Image 1 (tube, rainbow, N blue to C red):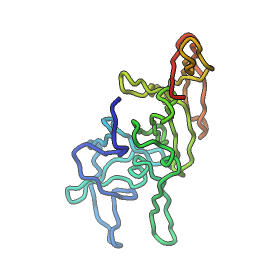
Image 2 (image 1 turned 45 degrees about the horizontal axis):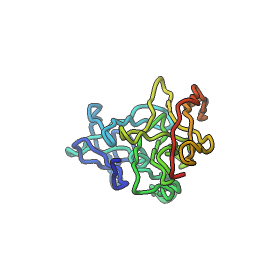
Image 3 (image 1 turned 135 degrees about the vertical axis):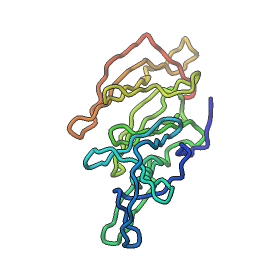
Length: 218
């Protein structure tokens, strides 16, 4: 299985700065003019990310100022797995590492992407590849955990995004299989996650009790 060091990287050949928002940037109480560039792409682990304003839903793009690209602080911080809060009384942007990071085994494989303004973190669980996990984290840092299967042979998590829905494959524990030396057995479940009226809705779309996986590490 391919490993990584647990770090997330923004790639795309640009120098990333930070901004809080807008094409007119205030720096040291001085307004400056900057160019919004809709052609610059930002990718995480090869997957292009789409940034949106969490209030209006409008797309947000890099701002170019003095030949440097600046991205919204909240979007970039969330992409790195950080919670963001703004203290208006003290003019302070506060970043905090969320609790879920303490539960991730750094020796495993991770992947991250955005889905409907949720930061999605997938990682291989230390107790077995079959029971890998998917976290959806909103802008306030609230998280919801789901199961996801990691295909070790093809080195990929089993999910896809279709029509604003997140389609995920997981395997559900279904007891012990004595014919396989007492290993735990799991059957396949496909489900979708959608955002309805601001609430994450999970719906099973398929169960296959003939598609079985075994795992000795559980």
